[in-house]
Amino acid sequence: MMGSDLIVSPSPHVHSGSSISSIYDNTFLALLPATLAGLSIYGVSALQVVCASVASAMLAEALFQLMLRRPVTVADGSAAVSGLLLGLIMPAGTPLYVVVVANFLGIIVGKQFFGGLGSNPLNPVLVGWAAVRITKTWAGFLDFDLMLINYDTTFSMAYPLAVLKAKGAAGLEGVQLIDLFLGRQSGGIGAAATIWLLVGGLYLLVRGMIPWEIPLGFLVGMIVTGGIFWAADSASYASPIFHILTGNAMIGAFFLLTDSGSSPTNRWAMLIYGLAAGVLTIVLRAWSSYPDGVVFAGLLASLFAPLLDKLRKKQEVPPSRPLEFL
Image 1: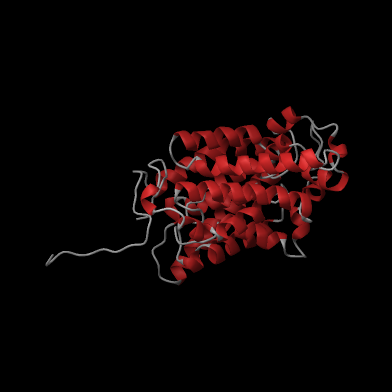
Image 2: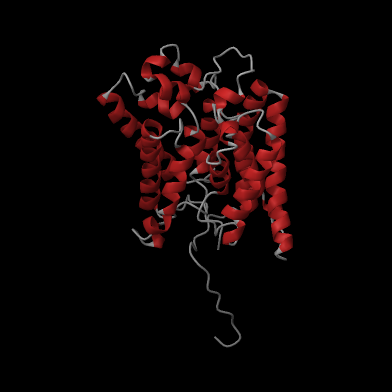
């Protein structure tokens, strides 16, 4: 052993063969259809939000790393994807300074404070969005009914989850599930493009860029829990299919909850993690003051990711898991 270096690093130690940059390049590509769909509906204001979000996320990461004299890693694409995701779950017309602050908080507090990519216990996108949402002064900027009131479209600009919260299932009589699936609904710039998010998510699954266990667990959790509420009181609660087609459900299943830094690495842990997030999403939609619960459910579930990983040995990581951090 003389003359040899012994390198000790934290798990995971299994590598799928995918580089960090290729994973985020493919994620960015998978989000493009939903992004274009949102821009086609909301126009220039949506483009401004998305561009400001991507640029500020990259700037936040570069400035913080330069300040601490760390290697600048914005070229790996992780910050750009975080910025794009945050922009897609925000309404068109959100003031750009709010977008910038959300990204700086998410990237710096939620990611760089913990050591950067792979060391973050929480998804920086969820941290940035939640920070704005719980701020009393800025919470209204994430109110879709308020922010999208001036848009004239071929479908109703009433946010489906807000209608459900205010009027119960009776208020959804004119809402068609096929419209929700095709993205003819108000919401985040790209989060409402259900069909295109599904296409993008399936693309990542086929390429092995994300694990199948988390989306499956999340959607099953939503369907089962939503079905229980619906069976108990169909006048007050919507069907489980409605829930998975609205709000941040689809973007959460494939793009937010699958963040490799804040999600578990073991197969059963990933299933439980996704299932718990799905259950919490429906519970928050039904009983909290927030119309949608995906972001807060994702944050809560991520807190238990390290504990869930202890349920099984690390060797049980499936080969399809894109473990890029050695």
